[in-house]
Image 1 (cartoon, rainbow, N blue to C red):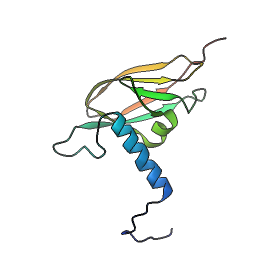
Image 2 (image 1 turned 60 degrees about the vertical axis):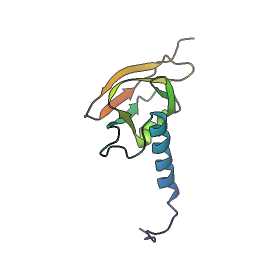
Image 3 (image 1 turned 90 degrees about the horizontal axis):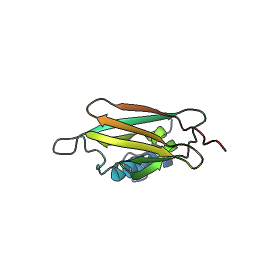
Image 4 (image 1 turned 30 degrees about the vertical axis):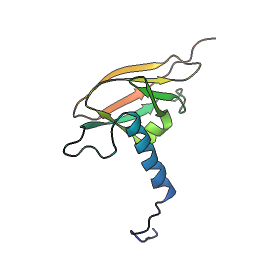
Length: 119
């Protein structure tokens, strides 16, 4: 593995993409990244998986606010503020997935299954 100068302002592209996805998800949820510290909003981690028939590019919404494509959440996870939240995953041609979750101190893991709408 190549060593690089830690004072360099450049991050590897993969790390930049991961940070960008975390920032987008956290901002969409109204949580500042890294806010699990004193004086900030408490958050719970969220992980999502999908069944084989569920499209990876389905849209994820939290409390009716668009967050990101499903594949981004699958790759990077997310954060939810403490409390109840409705998570919806949609894709044209499929019935929506809808879950009411209670974020407390335990991580949330969901397996999303979108059923195709019959012709």
